[in-house]
Length: 417
Image (cartoon, rainbow, N blue to C red; front, side, top):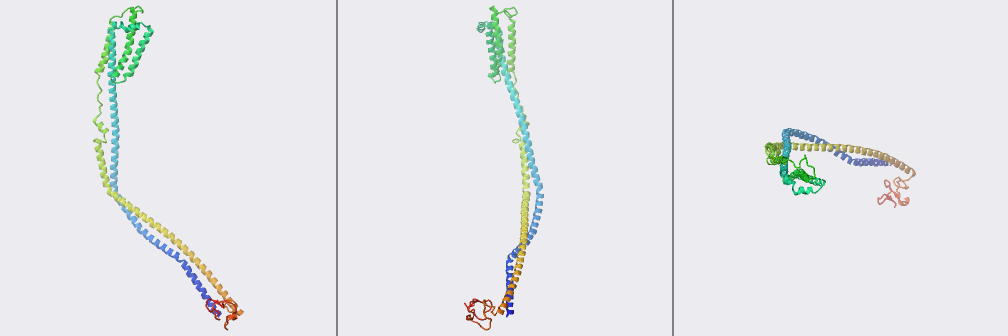
């Protein structure tokens, strides 16, 4: 009886150990699946790396070949563009220099024209002033007896000097202000300048001569009157001065037109007129033709470069996937090792606990048999045989194993309810 019960306990312990092992295996199933999937991904990534590397090598070779084909055309296009830039820069530089020279020549011509106009106006003004002075010298007797001289004689010498010199300075200032003007104003300015010197001198000499005749002043050179040849000589000199001024104005040659050569004008308009514009247009046409010729090889080079970039990205993606798969593989392997070790420890603990419970149960059965109680029930039920009923037991019992007395009529493991 005891041996059979011990056999049952051993079977229960074995079942428990098997269940624990199966449960542990079930718990380790997920890391195992993850590890398997990671290994599969790693193998697939390695295969992708091999194939993608072959694509990268092919794309690199294609890019190198298209680059070699496109290089001569691209160099020719760049050289043509460089020639266009150099020619344009040269034309612009020549154009700037030519325009500067033309501007300088025009400035010189304008200055010469202004000098000529100034010479004409000064000659006319000075000539007119000299003619007026010559007229006064020729009509000196009449001038000395004029009302103006008489008026000056009626005032003292100081006031007469101030009036004549002040009027002369005023005429000089007005003439200086008008002399830089053009046309009639410039002529009047030169006339006033000449009269500013001639009139005060003539008026003061006329007053002095009148004062000598009236006996109010001492005669010059011990003579009441100057010899007749003196005013005539002065008139002749002034007349010559007038002829010189008027002649220089009349016969003065106008400055020649600005002598700008045709070549200089062409250089000044090099970007808009021939031959510079034609040369630039030919260079641009040559550059456009070289660029059009290079477009086909350059497109092929760009397409090969794009394919190389795409293949390189795919290779990096495959390598990244391989690294990730290897990392997952190591992670799942570590997790699986941890779970297996844990299940082995738990199974060992369960086996030890089941063995201990079996020993305790065997010891309890031995104690129960020795005490006269059936070990299949809680409490103290007489061992079978003989058969006992609930009246003899007198209390509710729990069925632990078999029910030889038939106390659990409804099979709920509780007898004598």
